[in-house]
Image (cartoon, rainbow, N blue to C red; front, side, top):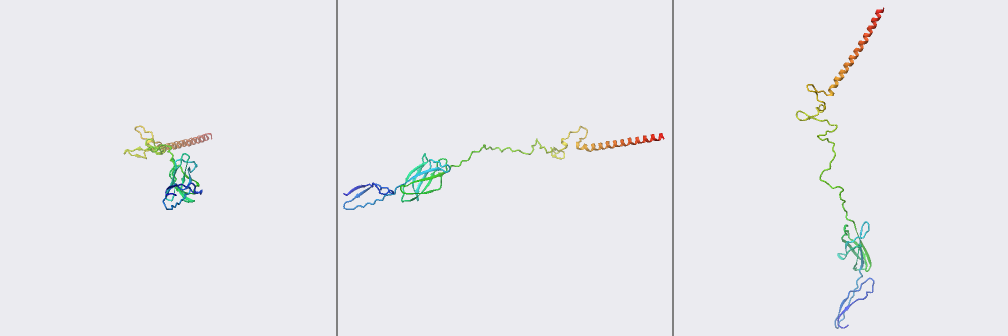
Length: 240
């Protein structure tokens, strides 16, 4: 070739695993031999990203992930309205190991925090799937909370309504209610000028009166029988 600048363009690699090298300039100098080394790169892997609901398998839009190898991020993809995204991932060998990490979760879902790994070869299609769980929601309370304590039934009698088994205390002269006067406080007040008696006080008198009447009746019966006997004796004596 005459000295000058030439443009090198590879038209075919001759291998299904390799791409053609990029175009490059070649400088030819007078009286010198210019050597060219062409290294064809591996074809890129074709990546299909899917984001799915972990329960239903529904495809989810809006998930963003980074894909890389080692410490380098090589590709960033975000799922579209159909829940998928695609791209080309450069590979450096016939089988290259990659990692994928989600950096943004779909709306209403939790971020998938673990990092997944997968392998890809030159020109080979590979599908990468990340799953997301729905964000837990707290159900609203069924009743609106109030600051007032709930009314609880109480068995304790109120000052104005004593319990059915409780005696009512009558204040003593000193102002302190006593239990000994509880029964007498409910009795009917005695007339003026007389002493008040309760039903319990009258019971011994009623029993005594009944005993006297029974004794009187018995004495009258004995006297009547004796009188009848005497009359019979007198009649017999007069006949004889």
